[in-house]
Structures are given as structure tokens and as C-alpha cells.
Length: 374
Image (tube, rainbow, N blue to C red; front, side):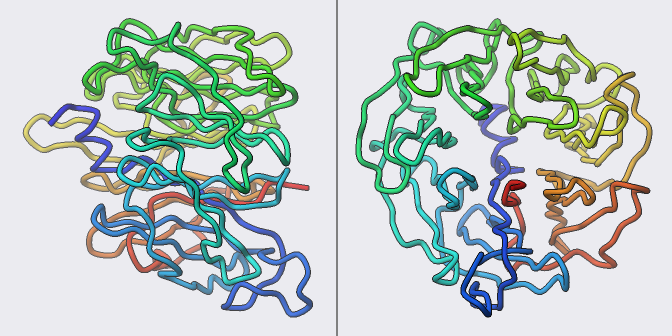
């Protein structure tokens, strides 16, 4: 099995769903019927054979598990423009699902984005326009986000590697731009370089290519309000200390170079979030010859690139995804430990664990989504 595919199935690329804002009861509805979803996190769950999702109340940690069966390889995306949660179901489903918080977070609409297209992420830029990134096609699909009505395509074949597709993996919408991570993989292995393409949100025109310092932007890209930067984590080839984390300045799309290096950390950077200019967290996967990989959640200083602490360690691919609560006061971790999988929560002020035991979500947790700040 190719290296990328093997690792992906072991940690099943983080599914990012969302916290929707408003006090909810177990059915997903609020007592006054307004602002449904406040105080909940949406957690994508999977055992790689079956997929589902759960909600976790941020106050009392109450869980509604196994809400609906979904594709076992899916990611979530909350969009503040349409105030909607989406599920992107990947190869084999090739579809986008629309979730309704007023109906117990059920899937209320689904649309195809092309057979075999293997969608990876959704970037909503207006109530009527969204871009769907597809692994199996060199073109981004342009659709109406709520109905899937086809609006066109954006051809990215000029940025493809030798297999003819660029492997568009993750997107971030910020200001008037859509930042698209181009992995450029052949046989699931990175080619000579990877990029981030900067698209005009309104037209889809590619305005700039930012060639990354490393290859394989594996983790979800995020915008960091604290730094006013786009955060890009590059894993390179798994098992080789060739990647790192760097930042894109949205003012001029300039690249920082590595602010965190795998070479210094001793492992692959699987995911990373940044709290402020002195604190960030990352999932680190360390290869042990003959013993597979172990994963840990580390604290680091984005200013110095130093590892400053370890929050959790596990044997195997047990940690896959991190997410900060909307106010950045909590770090949520998907813990897929075989004996006791669940969501773990840490206080970002002093790094103490808030949860005494992992919060069970039915199937093991894969990804977490919160509603953006107002």
C-alpha cells in the first residue's frame, strides 16, 4: 500500500465539522427555536468501515452520538456566510451533504460533485457560490453551496504534476481570496514541490502561486486571527524529517519560510493550530523502525520554533486532529486510542486537561468543527 494511503487510512484525514451557536437540547433544537446549535461541537466519527457524527455540548459535555450514517471517509466544514454545516464525502460517495441544526443535525440535502471526483474540501465565498476541491479531477467544481447547482469549473491543470492532477486538498477563504493547498502527489508521494494557489474569490481566477518551502500540505490550512496569517503544515514524505510549518501573509501573499521544522521536532507534523504569537499545538508522528509510529500532542513557540511541552502521548496513530474552541481558550483533540477513544479537552491557558476521561462519541472521533466567531 502506498505510504500516503497507508497513513491516511491509519489516521483518516481529519474530518472538520462545526460548533453551531445556540443552546440546544439533545435533539439539536433550542428552547426558543433561535440560534440553534450554540455551545455544541460537531464531531465526525469513523472506524474506517462506517462513518457517523456526534454533537458535544461545550458546557456539560453531553453527547448525542451516531446521529446519522455517513461515508467512512468524510470531512466537515462550517460556513459562516450561509450559516450552514456541510459534510464532504470523499471517494466512493463523491458528494456534499447539507446538515440542518433545526432538524437534529440531520442530512437534509445531498448533491454529487462528479463520479470518482474524490472531493476533499468546500470553500464557500457567497450565499450562491462555492468551490469544491477534488482529488480525482484537475478542475475545481463551482457550485451553489446549498443546492449543488452547477456554475462551472476552474482548471488547475497548469499546476499538476506528472499524473495530470494537482491534488487540491484544503482551502481557506479569507477576505477576497481563496487559498488552495496543492499537494502534487504521484502514487500518494509528494513530487518535487507543492504550492498554495491564491484565487480571486469572485471569479476563481488564479492570481498567484506560492511555492512552499516543503512538500505535501497534509493538514487542514487555517487562518490565524492572532497572527493574521494563513497557517500551512507540510508533512513531506512520512518518516522523513523534511517538512515543517510556515505562514502566508494575506496582505501580500508572501511566505515566511519554516517557523517550525520537523528536523528539530524529530517527527512528522500531522496537524497544527496557533493560539497566539508564543503558543501553538501540533500533532507529531514519530516513526520507530520495527514498531510503527507513535503520536504526541506538543506545545510549541511559533516565534522561536521551539518545542516547549508535551500534552499527550500514545502508541500508534491515536491523535489525528486538533481544533481550538471559537474563543481559543480550549484545545480539543481527537483521541482514537483503541481501548478508550473519545474527545479530550485542554485549557490553553495552563495546558491542564479539562476532561477526566475522553468523551465518548460512539464511533472513534476523527475531526471536530466549531462555528466561527461572530
